[in-house]
Amino acid sequence: RKGISGSTKTDLGDVTPHNIKQLKRLNQVIFPVSYNDKFYKDVLEVGELAKLGTKMLNHVLNICEKDGTFDNIYLHVQISNESAIDFYQKFGFEIIETKKNYYKRIEPADAHVLQKSLRSPCAPPGGELQKAE
Image (cartoon, rainbow, N blue to C red; front, side, top):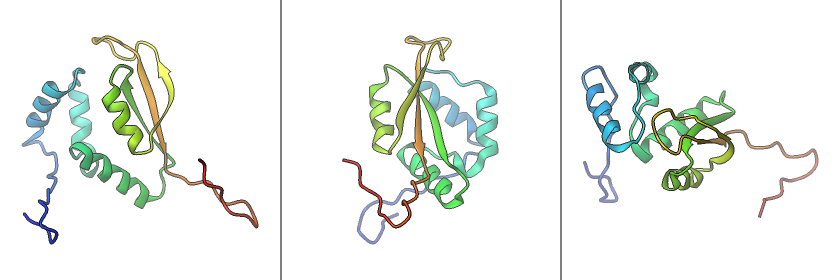
């Protein structure tokens, strides 16, 4: 479909029992990690939070921010996956920890833990927040 600006609009469909095998196949081709059956069962259970690509991350961030009960979002990225690290850092994620031997079947086995804080600090009484530079 075309939007008002003339750009193509992409609608994200839900992951369902009917298309979960397609998601599994995409993950096998794209990612160096094999996800187990429990992962895909969990994907089906989270419903709206399971969308694809950059749109998926925007979708999840919007849901979490609207919900208002989430303080932080965490994820793991293989330490050698610089493009994924850059991708997530553009969305405000920061490396907060490195877990040794996180992955079992790929090298390097270590993973960075990235965090995005969804809570902005409160302004001090009678003052204004300073913008970090």
